Image (cartoon, rainbow, N blue to C red; front, side, top):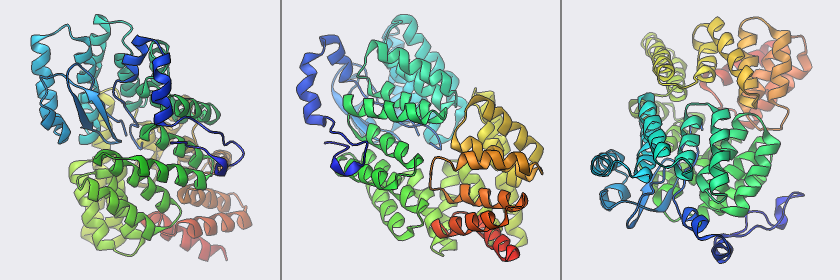
Length: 474
C-alpha cells in the first residue's frame, strides 16, 4: 500500500507497499532478512508502546497498545495466552523458559519488552527497572542484538528519555536497517525532542523500508503536528483499511477518533471510538477518548462513568486530571472533593514514576499549573524545556509562566507552541489568555474564538474559562 500518492500535496511521492517490500527482501543479506521478519514495537506514552515478542518457534500474534504483529515465539509460551492478550500469563511463561535457558538472549529481550508493555497497559512504572535488567542481560549475552537495542529504545521512550531512545534506536538500525521497532522509536524520539523536520524525514525513511500500521500512524502524527489534518486523516484511514488484527483496528480507529475530536467532530469521533471498542472493548485509550467526546457532546453522566472506568484501571496523570475536571464541572461540594482526590493521585503517580526512572516533569507541569503547586509547575516546565523543545513543552511552559504571573515571557513560548500550525484548541486557548494578559486584546479575542470554533468542548474547565474571558473582553 502506498502512503503518499498524488493527493498528498507537494511532498508526495510513491513508496513501496507490503507486496513490494516482500519482493525486495531477497536482495538483502540473509541475516538482515531474518531480523526484518522479527516483531515490531510502536508508540509509548501521551503517547503508547507496541509490543512484539520474538524468540524461536511458531508464529503467534501478541496484542499491544498500538497494534499486533505476527512474530516468532518460544514454545514455552502458550500461543493461546498471547493471542488472547494475556500478557501476565505470557510473562510468567517467559520467566519459566528463561529459568531453564538463561543464555537465551532473545528471550531476555522479549521479556524486557513485555515488562515495558505491562508497565504501559497497567500504568505501573515499577516494571521499568525489571525491563532494563532483562534488556541489558540480553545485551551482555549478545552485545549487537538489534532486538535488545530496539527494546532499550522503547524503554527509554517510555521513561521520557528521548535522547537515550534516539541513541539506542540508531544503534539498533546499524545492526538491522529494517528493524521496525527501531525505525518507529527513532520517529518517536525525534518528535518528542521537537526535531520535527528530522522526524518527517525519519517517517519517510521508515515508510520506504517497513510500511505498516506502526509506521503509518507515526507518519500521520508528524503531518498532524504541522497542521496537515487532511493527510493525517487519509493515512490513518489507509492504515485502518489495511489493519486485520483486533489490536491494530482498535489502535488506528482510536487515532482517527482523537484526530476527529481535535477538530470538534464529535459524532465522527464517537463512531471511530465505537469501532475501536468493537474490536477490543477493553482498549483504554478508546474509552478515554470516548469519555471526552461524550462530554463534548453533552453527555456529562456518560463521560464521568466512562472516565471512572478508565482511571480505575489506568491511573495516569491525564485521565486523573480529566476525571477531576469532570467532577468540578458538576459543581457540587462532594464533586469538588472528589476532584481534589484525583489531583492528589497525580502527585502519587509522579513520585512513583520518578522512583522508577521516569522523567515526569511534563506531567507535573501540566497538572500542577491548574490544579496544584504553581511554583512547582514552573520548575518542572523549565526543567522539561531544558531537555526538549516540543510544541507540547512550549505550551506547558507558557501556561506555567502565565499562572505564575510572567506573561511577557509566556507570550514568547505560547507563540512558539502554535507556530507549526498544529490544530489544538487547548494551545489556542492558552495563547488567547496570555495575549489578553499582555494587552493584545484583539489577538486574544481572536485566539479564544478560534479555540472554541475548532473544538468547543476541548476541556470542561478550559472551555468555560475561554467563554468567560471572551465575555469580559467585549
